[in-house]
Image (cartoon, rainbow, N blue to C red; front, top):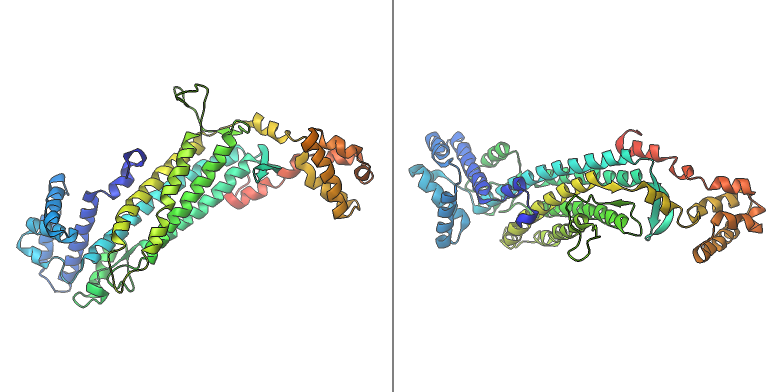
Length: 438
């Protein structure tokens, strides 16, 4: 985790203090369940809570690290330090459990905590997109395919498109959270040979998880693969929106641009520059989040009931992916919220090609007037190519073309060059996306 791209609340999930607190709660809840079953004394379970539930200060963490340096086993180091706090009753801690019970259940808690923050982040992105969509609902602008002028759309529809996509992303994260929120307290190779399944159910309920149906000795990694794949999809949506803004900010387009604050500098060499640095940054951050997807998929394949080939991967991609995406979503919400829109540039770009954007409507009108589609296409295209090559008025060329004018008189041709024709269904689309037109 790089501080430059970390926000405190998400980063705190992956700090040792939070991890060890979760480990302690897993062990302490398991003791409660064992005491409830009569396997260990109730006084021992109470002692674990009373003496062990102390903040994981820097001193406690340093002690665990020192023990691990000798034992070379993180869970044993943790349990050893906990035993120092609890005393004689510590012999009842971790009964029938294996390290993966602690590690995997803790990771499930951490990932659900991270998912909750990411869902909150997406809600902020959705709110910004909705506000900007309605603000620019009827602002006509150029629609493009292959980067080339196509037909008119509206700036509001652009925002609505991204809003619909992030609605889907929110649903993906909710599903990924549910998929990962499982608990395994099943012991070596997952057979519950030395621990009652009741303990797993107890701990799961206390931590807001569900018991893993079959955990072998680890929680199956297809769950984690889906989680990180979902993060990758969200990251790609972040990049798609960021890339759209970057294109719209190009000097030749300049229909929108990132907010440029007073005192901000765009270039060390060129004082005139106003660069799309935030959305370029988001493009790069999205690549980092997606880079975790393939390792997460490869983690699905483990030897027999368990190995630890997945462990080193998850210790890195868990924090890095969630922290990075949290930062990216927060930045994206800010970019959208303060994005500067230039209506004059939108209008100028609509008129840039002399009316070519109405070519399809002319084509359709000619077929409806009796011309074959093939002939109509040829007639419209030959006039359109003159606009490209000679920078002339498309409407004037059509009026002077005998094949066209014999089917469509001047007044009818002029009526075809109506911008409102292309935006007449904006309200219907908004109702689909937002449940309301205005």
